[in-house]
Image 1 (cartoon, rainbow, N blue to C red):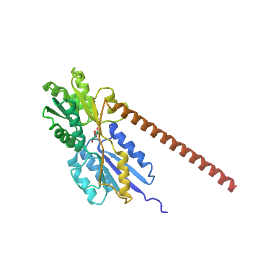
Image 2: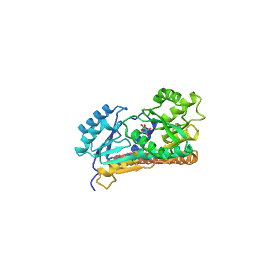
Image 3: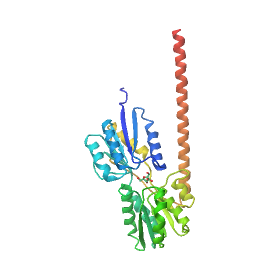
Image 4: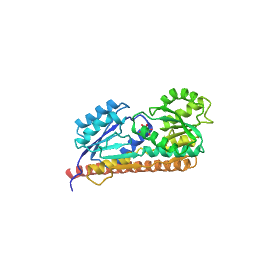
Length: 326
Ligand code: FRU
């Protein structure tokens, strides 16, 4: 049989500086370990859409075989992604979309659905009466746009629940620490905060605590990461009332990319599900994620062992050849 052809995958990532993106990357590397014939190149735009445009241009000059993109902001990154697609480079959009239909496949959550699920949960949690504050992700990033749309649409079914204020965030905690106090002082009626991710939700909780509000303002986030500072732990600790699971999708992105490169059938839309994590199911979630992590470690131990055996075998072969030649 022919050796597997060599492929170069370029990944234009909006940022790498948070645990959710790290989990995404870990998932990608895990799946990539099955493909020694793939070179994986990552360029980190560090939250800068201009830099992301330039880095995608670089990928085009480097003639990657496939491009994976998580667009910092949809609008400014769209033209260069369209250019790649029009040049015949397959494009997998991961999590943050462009505004264009010109891409090969999408992998990630349905963020309108994430917002809707949050809105339904909040509506019933408040018993149909209350005042909600929404802390949004970076303006112009597709998950922020879509989460707000879904959230507002679901709340519309609860006429007694009012969206009292919207705060412009940037996915990061410090902006919330800076901007939220003034908004909360102006809106003392607020009794629930929906933040577009768990990092901003944690910031919201800290502000509430600082202002002596944490007993009567509940906080709901998005992401539901495992691990010590992840959303699952925050729900277990009672910092967050709930979080909406938003899987990073790294493994799925590489699987889809490989199907495209190998000319196998693939789906254009690969939507990863969401669910509410709250006090009723957080322990189950925690146990399951811990078990998964333990299994992952076992697999890595087995791989190391196999590699050691291969190395030993190879050195014994060398000794044998040496003897035969003598
Ligand atoms: C990580 C992150 C997540 C959020 C996602 C949206 O960089 O901010 O917290 O769910 O990006 O694209």
